[in-house]
Image 1: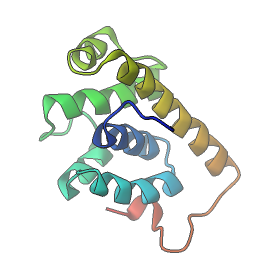
Image 2 (image 1 turned 90 degrees about the vertical axis):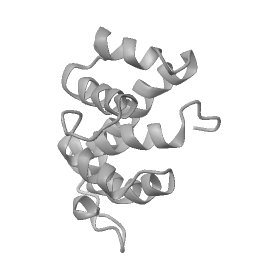
Image 3 (image 1 turned 45 degrees about the horizontal axis):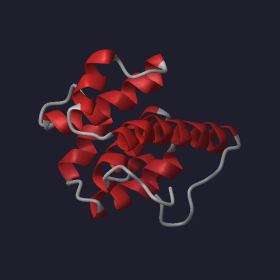
Image 4 (image 1 turned 135 degrees about the vertical axis):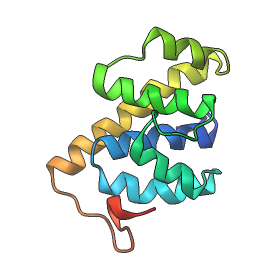
Length: 128
C-alpha cells in the first residue's frame, strides 16, 4: 500500500496468520523477516502458527490475529472482534485490515495453485 494506515506490526500479524492458514510458503517465508523487522518476537512468530487461542497474546494482538482467522473461515470479522478492533483502530485501519487479509488470500491462492516455489533463501513454512 502506498500510504498504509495500519501499523507495520499489526499488518504483519494479519499477513503472517493468513499465510499460515493458507499454507502459503512464499508469503510466510518472506514475512517472518518483515514481521521481526516490525517488532514481532520469535515467540510471536511461533504463536502465529497456533492462532488467536494461543497463550501469551496481548488483547490487541489477539484481536488482529482473530480477525485474520475469522476472515479466513467465515469471510467476515465478527461483531465481538470488530468491537475490540474499533476500540483502538481508526476507520482507515479498520478498512485496511480486511483488504490486507484478502490480498494475501488471493496471492496464496494464485501462488499455491500455480505451484510457485520460494526464492533461494526462503525456507517457506519452516521459517521461524
